[in-house]
Length: 193
Image (cartoon, rainbow, N blue to C red; front, top):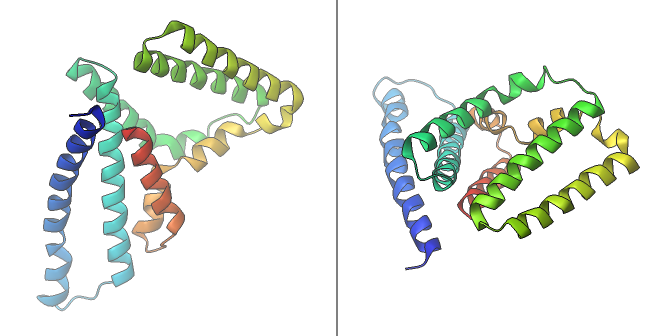
């Protein structure tokens, strides 16, 4: 059995359990409409459930990725909860970020360092990690020297484009955007592979 088969099997097992729970929760709107003669927006209800399903599947993939980074289950759980809390607070946090290009540069360097740690943990090769790190330094430094205006407000733009709950909120209110579905599917595939 290949590693990808194990990862996909674990993901689909968790996804099936999650989908069963979501399907059971669909009884509530049906009861509201048919038993109590309540009115409910079909578009809003379908959007809410589709958004909730995509959000849950993305969280399963992110949690599996974080779990794969460590052998300790407690550390994986704590880091996963911290990442989910950060994702939940991302929209509020981005409003407090300075728009300075130097702040954005410092944050990008920090994110690159985190990426290098993840790469090293995945491949366990110092030389390859150093090569990737050198490339990132050249890319980040070169971009900053050539086009410093690109870093103005960059962290706000990044947090805005990666907003998971903002996309879910759009779907919850019945605003269906195919781009949101593509975003969630891309997020799932990224964290599974």
